Every structure is written in C-alpha cells, then in structure tokens.
Image 1 (cartoon, rainbow, N blue to C red):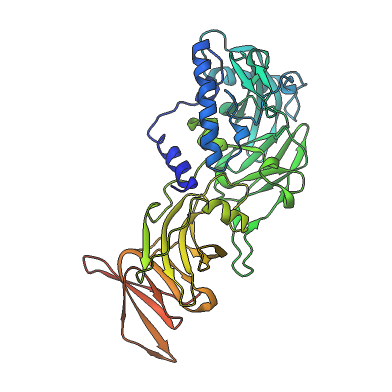
Image 2: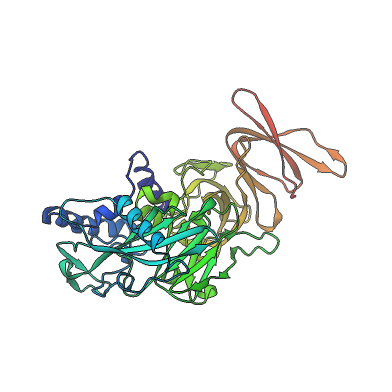
Length: 450
C-alpha cells in the first residue's frame, strides 16, 4: 500500500466520528495516571505511522501532538502585556475572556489553571480578534524531547491558546502547548471565507496561498508574500477562494524553506476535527480512480510503482514539499517500443484537484524521469491523457469505458478506430477520443491542447 494511501485511509477511518470542538485540548490535559500511560504508549505507535506517511516524527511526542518537542520554558504569552490596538478596550478584553471561558471545554480536576490572559487584541482585515492564553494542568507520565532525553511530564508547563473573533467575541479555534524547542510557531486561519491569518511564535514570516502549476514554464511552485508584524503577531491574508488547507507560512527565506521552517497551520473550519487533523490535513474525496487499481495497456507485464510515489514526486519538484501527504489513485502501465515502460498515476496534489503524472522507466524498472501531464478531468468518464516521451503519442485513461479515436490528416478526419478498454496508447495524430459506457452511451473529448 502506498504510504500516502495509508495516511489517507487512516484519516478517512475517522470521518464518521463526531469529535466535539476542543477535543484535542481535552486529550492534552493530563488526567488519571492510567490514561496518561496509555497515551504515552500510543504515541510511540503513532510515531511509526506518521513517519511512514512522510510527516515529521517529532510532531508526535508523548501527549503533545501539536508541537515538535517538549520544553520546560514558560510560555511568554501567559504573562506579556496585552498588545494590539484594542489593548485599551477593557470591555472587549473582558468579553474575550468570558467567551474563552465559555467556549473552552472543562474537565474535572481544574485542568485549566490561573486566569485566562489576553495576549493580543486588535482590528484585522478579518474583523476584531483576540488571542487568549491560559495555563493548564501538567500531564503525568514520561515523555522524550527531540534529543531523546527523558522528561517527567509533570515538570513541563502546559498552556492553551485560543482565537476569538468578532465584535462580540466567539471562540473559533484553540491550540494546546504551542511553544517548543526549536520554536516553529503556529498560525490561525479565520475570518470570512477562512483566508485571514494571524501567526505567532516565530519571526520573519512569509505567506503562500497555495501550490500552483504554470504549464507555460513547466515549473510548479509557490508564490510568497511577506506578512506584516503587529506588536508580537504577524498578519496576512490569502486571495479569495483559497482553500485554507493550502495556505502555508514559513519563517526565514521562503525560497529555501522546508517543513522545519513551516509553521503549524490551524484552519478554523477543521477545529472540530482536533489539532492533529488541522495541522496535518489529508485531502479526501478527490480521487477519480481507485488507489489499488492497476490497468495494463497492450498486455504489459511491467510492475506497478512502489510505495514512495509521494517522496519521488516531491524530490522531482512536482509536489509541494510543505505538504504532508498526497493520496494516489490508479496506475496505468504501458511498455515502450524502445524498451522500458511508462506508468501514469493519478495524484491528489492540492485540496481542490488532482493531476496525472507520468513516470518513465528504463528496462531495469528504474524511474528516469517524472512528467506532470494535466489536471484530471471531472466531466464524464475521461480521467485524462498524458503525452508520451518524444511526443510519440498519448496514454489515455478512462477506467470502465471503451475507447476509440479519430486521427486527422489536414482537414480529413478518419473513421473511429477501436483502442480497447480502460486505457490505451493513441498515436500522435489522434485528435479526439470517444468513450462508450457499458450501457452504450458515448462522450467525446478533444486531445488538442487548449
């Protein structure tokens, strides 16, 4: 099973659960020793799963799912003076604290300690907001820091940070134990259409709304905009219709930033799913094809790709290095007349679409090149087509459909030529592919580039 597929299945398995808002915070609140021991044991198991999915194992340490390590340092947000242009509006600060108390779930044993403290309150493009921090009860049990040192969790100060939005403040998101060593920082995504960003815990921040493909240049990537510092927080805004799961914030030079420089992103639309599924979301429901399906063209006996599709596509510069996982769909395999084979695979590369990618392989089965083909088509039964190496034709994919095609010589179109079922190699002169369903319905798709 592909590691991306594994992560997708693990995430999908929880879709039927109705997780209440703030569940992740409750999990981080210590409780009875017996429950803590169980969490520490589960953490060791989950570290293996997350590592297999291509995520940073440092993000799973004992009962701290949200931060990449454990620190005994005091969270300065608990004691720093209130900042922002609404810092002097005591009525608003009081309302924010009251809403924080009302919105945060409670647990027997005084899990939340001391009084909530408003760290920042101000007016942003997404409206009035307040950031409130509160100390919470230490956990019991034993954990490990990033260097493998054993730590008594009772000595680790824990806190929770909440984001409140609106003229009449409402708690819309929360994040447990955000401070860590090294400090990565975190960012809440909020506001109308979930495109406003407030980031904390790191400096020199840049914002990118998403991973995009520029087919004219063949160079996919991200475009970055500097965020604006405002008294201890950093503010930014993504364009309209930006999927919040696609937004990334990094510290330092964005051209060189990897996952270690990326802040933990917390979209408010995913708060009810818990901190882990906010910070490590997996795109779901976008595949047009089955992850375990393999279609062979012309009787090819070449093996399918292995379980490292996400990693190899990322290394080739075709997938976002700041993304956690990229679920993969069916594979379409064909032999090459000159030796070796090609494999076309559907990969979900963003939260709104998937692409077809083509792997060229030599006679020994080693991948010699990856090529981005096109967006997967959402209309009808046609998944899409990839141009074969040297523009020697197309590999067209249409699972469950019969394929036929026309060629064009000048202004003359040929009769329809049968090409088999599910997938086919079409000549470079092919202009249109016709699909026929088992019920006899037909649809046409142009192969001419727009």
